[in-house]
Length: 183
Image 1: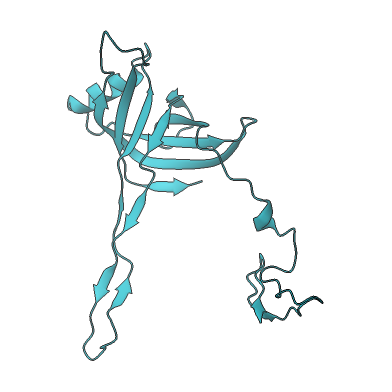
Image 2: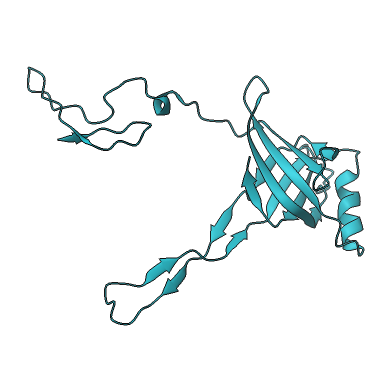
């Protein structure tokens, strides 16, 4: 007996009889062209980051970054041990925390990110921006957009300088934020 899975999540048993010749029955969807089989994976090297004031559509600065890490949310489950339940504790949803997002790009002459970091570290702690990270396909169309709420720069790292080096100077910006949303 095999189970069939489709986009409608129907997991009713489907019986496939063995074809003549003794081959085992085929396990899986009964249709070859289900939508799950036609999805193309997204490439991670085409993305753009835009910073905006919360609630506005006017971008303050944007950048073509070479790397973005830390798009991550972690929920700490709450463990509840009840008396008399010897099989195991109950697990409930707990507080969600967000990882620091790290953006890396080639060093440029624009100073938007440095100015933002300098302003916040100099006492403008309430100056927070929202950020949108758009993943794009080969044609440049936006496929997936991640939104970061109330971003604050917590670390800025300039390029390492070395007279013997030949690599491109990379600057890093570390962002603490208060929410991660998939738009």
